[in-house]
Length: 345
Image (tube, rainbow, N blue to C red; front, top):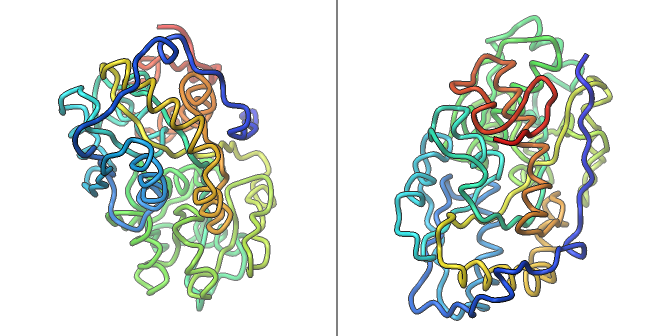
């Protein structure tokens, strides 16, 4: 039996002090718009929180922050675009940090890892297992039995194998000693949730923020949240934790944010660090978004953000090995899956 993985969410109030580089670098004053690539379709979890955060950054920087959706290959196409761009501070990306940290393991972006990025986290998200409102399944136990006995007959809508929904259904299969399913892939978590509500798929395992309005509108019926605590959404009965059925399932919050490639000028990093510490951590707009859509408000940056991210990075990297999906061993990005720890490279 694998040990259960639990981590504590740290609020923005615990942000570390600005580092030495931030203290000595001059303030950056951009003179043209910043291109912020979301490597997923419109309406999904990454797109949602990025469009709340971008105006905060734009106001602080005094230039437009242009959000550009560039989906494809589970986020790898847009992410590669950012890595290929000049390291001048004018091209950023947004994603779940576990994606950027493990694209090498999945083989989608070889020779990349978490340390290719300056990390600015905003919220943590959790997947929810939901079915159409008229589904035959009334609770997760019934769905689990169907997955075990009917396998590929059960269609699951996600944003791709490495998306939050894709890794969630794979993790559920692993925790339940294996079951088959038929994944239907969409350009983002929002479209996957909408398709499920429309009856195109029997299940979705995308994030709560991508499903909340459909759940409130009684178009989706939530069966379980991938957490050890119920998920409480205003106007909805508490969604039971997956541990009611799979008590030993490994769990870790999925952190989302904005990432700037390493190699940009120090003043870019120092300026964005300061904005994160002073504006983002105190943003009422971001707090309201999190409270409304079932996310956790959790701004952090730098070394603290990296430390918060590593549990979900390790979990997703090692689970991909367990499922036989890893193209490159996690040891190549400094993860020991025998101990489930990060090791020095």
